[in-house]
Image (tube, rainbow, N blue to C red; front, side):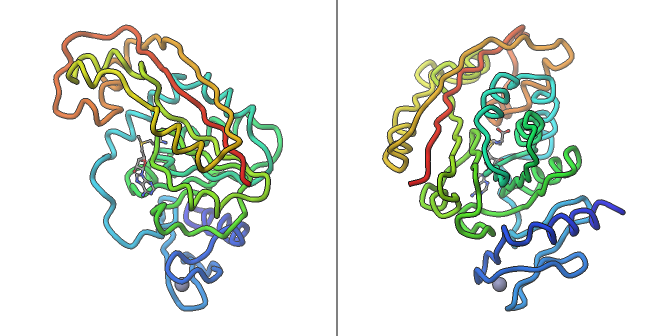
Length: 271
Ligand SMILES: C[S@@+](CC[C@H](N)C(=O)[O-])C[C@H]1O[C@@H](n2cnc3c(N)ncnc32)[C@H](O)[C@@H]1O
Ligand SMILES: [Zn+2]
């Protein structure tokens, strides 16, 4: 079976988790297309993903950036984060919102014994193409969080890692007793890179407003912070530089031997 057929088979099996992003009707899979009762059609690509986003993706992130993120994440830069998120998983339906090239979802679900279906979506076709290339076995979709193609109250866990949020939509998607796991930078995240490319006022990242906003929507929030230095493998020195848009068009002044990972995990419960 080729990648397209496997993706169609997975989508058919989990079609009850999706709806049409245009008319909100339920969907079914006919050959290599997802379709609703009103005839809206969404292609399953031969690279192994479904496209619910009818427009060209924004160009803020390109395939080189996602390839670099894949290399760096696979090398373990976020392994402590994956351990933490893996320990928090519950239920069987997991949705990664703004999943990029998919390594976080793949690493986190790999830490779980129980059977879990992981769906990752992102507005970037380059991100989803990379995810489908490296992580078969999950469902990958190009889609916009503003018009998401998912049924109401079906997801046990929402992951939202270093990506934009829409809390009204998160509440709609979450199953009763579901969890949102949102990861945001803390003050020293990627400090060594920021010091080389940003003005002094912008080197520290301020997450106060993001946390306050999250707690307004999810009053029962718990949070967990983690900070560590990641030793950069020699062969990934250039790759690390390419994994963030912060550095676009900027020269590296000196080789970095390690980088600070400084993150906050916000754990919100559905009401
Ligand atoms: C900093 S990247 C993080 C990607 C991934 N979670 C990671 O940590 O490697 C932010 C991601 O959010 C995605 N994104 C931005 N706006 C979005 C939207 N409206 N719907 C879905 N994804 C979106 C971008 O395309 C990008 O892949
Ligand atoms: Zn429709």
